[in-house]
Length: 127
Image 1 (spheres, rainbow, N blue to C red):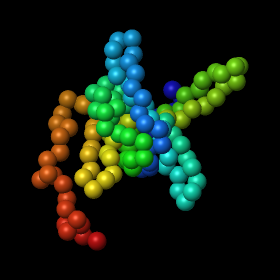
Image 2 (cartoon, rainbow, N blue to C red):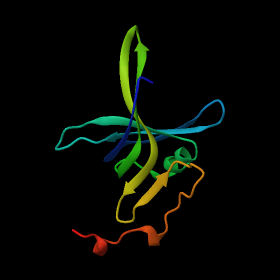
Image 3 (cartoon, rainbow, N blue to C red):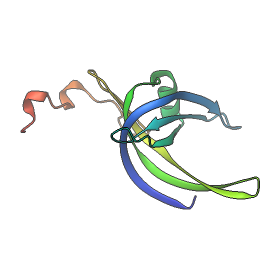
């Protein structure tokens, strides 16, 4: 891993999630999302690991709008003798943007459930 930065990106899922497992049976789910503006397509691979990967694989579908919170990673892969840099997001949390938002967070041992009392209603926003 040659670089690392915290990011929050919103966009649309352009490729449905693919779930696979490591040799140690740890779930990894990845999908492609477009975060471009005004007709400019900007694609990035998003991946999740562990319990979050299990939840996302069964929930996120192509065409949905999402907000991804995670770490930006740039790695170098050697393909046919040529070094190729790949930038991707290691997602720690993903929120589906729809009328009834769903939010998923990486399990850090704390509470990951949000009650309806924790949410701010549209009539409570000051602007």
